[in-house]
Image (tube, rainbow, N blue to C red; front, side):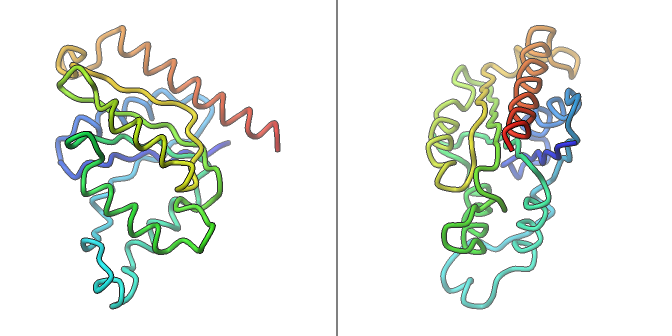
Length: 186
């Protein structure tokens, strides 16, 4: 059984991206999904002076956790057209642990599903486009991208409406199928 690590790139305790990650995790049928709270991996703001004091233990632990999984689901908010500083800081630390030519995420060409949500129409699509372009350089193989705009209109009584529920179900099925196809090629 494939193991997927799912996490939000937001450090907001009530982030809609946490809801999105949980919903996707619940829809998995053939893979084991572990959700991770990145805020539990406290990392200082990356800087060369800080790095010269030694690699933070939490960065090393996070890299180990990512290495134990076959694929990633990353839910990233969009801040001014880009990923939030919180997520960028995590990626910066992971990049410093990686050996030259090695993936930031623990293995080369790790399958990645990129998702985002926002109250606005764009749904974080600009950031996801930027992340998708960078992902191969980071060692990720983007298998899907999904942005959910007008988030509040898609939620009723704390649950996604039927249409969004079906979209997320189809997205997760497609991602799991891509993981199965990768296994068949190996």
